[in-house]
Image (cartoon, rainbow, N blue to C red; front, side):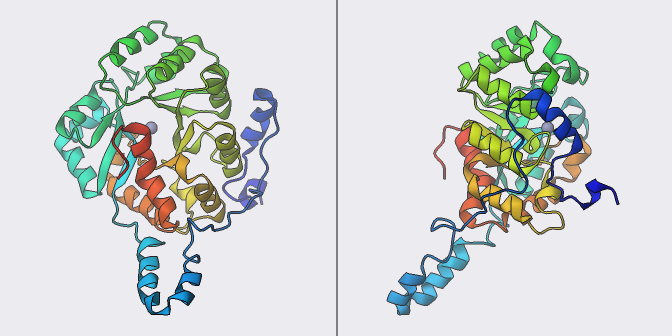
Length: 328
Ligand SMILES: [Zn+2]
């Protein structure tokens, strides 16, 4: 049997091990997580027991409250989807009103949308301004996804677009370790920080290091739980960088491999509940057809978390990061 077949899905891959030492000067976080999650007052239903003993006649009411406010009530709650694409080719099959219906049918109350070309996302925003939060995708064509960091005119264009004041963030930017000190990229990081806009990054861990070295005040969302969705690594980065957030799009299979949430992920999500976001990530057109199904999968594992944790990850963190409205 190949070694990889007997390792749990969250273990570091051989590629990660080989690049780690070349890209940074500190050791790779260890597997498994060393500090298991222990329920606290905030997350547990155990704390009212003393109260129940003292006020026995209120016991039934309290039990009802526990059932209502702890596990198992999230299936129908609104979602804040923090990672969507609405590219020009998607619009042929799915006009804006159809997209809005798909989102409403899945009980999405806010959706962060990027697009190629950049203004495509605004078409959705115009249809449902209370729901759609447009972020500035910087690619005009599919090819630019690979070469944007070599276009010296890009920072100027981004600066002009940001002056419009409608954008809630910048991204998704795809960039890997070898380009982490690219000047066009670093200038965009500076612009995001200067405008207090979150950056949605699809990148290697070493890129995250460079962003915070260059602009410690930047706020970064690490798409897909990073290029190596390995809980000890994510935990180490969340510890290291207080302005780092993690979007869990595309990682449902790792978080809950056969529907049941993995314990390692449960510990991580609970310990850093204020730093995770959910998203479906419509990275290709067909994904819009799968939207209800993917949203159901996300809700399935959210539903297995303590309710406070699920509330933070499903909605509250996105609201705090992307809007100026109070958290409901
Ligand atoms: Zn994406």
